[in-house]
Length: 86
Figure (cartoon, rainbow, N blue to C red):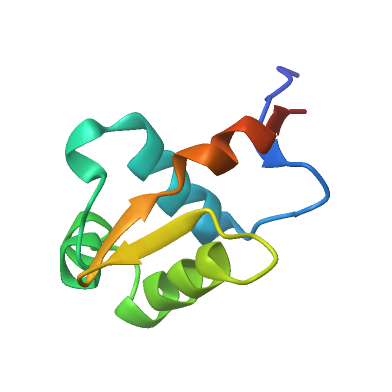
């Protein structure tokens, strides 16, 4: 069986939805600085509530992987230094 390496923040496990949102925003330049509605359209298979929960998780006080500026979400680039491949 093939081993899969996930990007995982140190001591801060993320849900699958949060990993998906974060990975999409990190890997696709056009996916950074999006509104919630734009994120909903990128994840059409998931209901908006799932994306809202992922955003809330990524913005939580203990994680802070996303920031919100004028209603647009962006990856907190300084937090990327904490990401570890396991």
